[in-house]
Amino acid sequence: MPGKILTGDLDREFVTIYFLQDERDNRRVAIRRLWLVLGIVAFLFSMVFLRVWQQMQVVKLGYQINQQRQDYHSLLDEHRVLLSKRNALASLERIEAIALQKLGLEAPHSEQLVFLVDPAVKREGLRGFFFGTGIFQRWFKQ
Image (cartoon, rainbow, N blue to C red):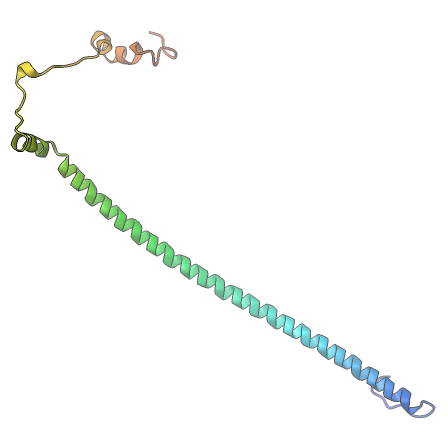
């Protein structure tokens, strides 16, 4: 058995080889255990590292989302300001004032007005407008 000192008929060389073999086996087992422990530690370290990296990515994406949200709201505000400017510039009162003052235009007299009417609308009203153009004639019969 390993670990016991044998005496008697066995010679000294066999006992030495036997115990050295036992020592080599113990070293192999110790080395395997060390590699196993190192592997477990490396695995655990990589799992912790992966979790920390994942959490850092979540925080980074949270910051990016917050920044995008702020940009969105600032663009909405700018859009509202631009719409109000456009509406102010396109107001009929402003255009009329510019036409009268800067361009020297005058309001048209009644004899200068010309009204254009589509013959289909004149003949049959809106029904003639839609059905007279041939758009809906395939689906609806008059």
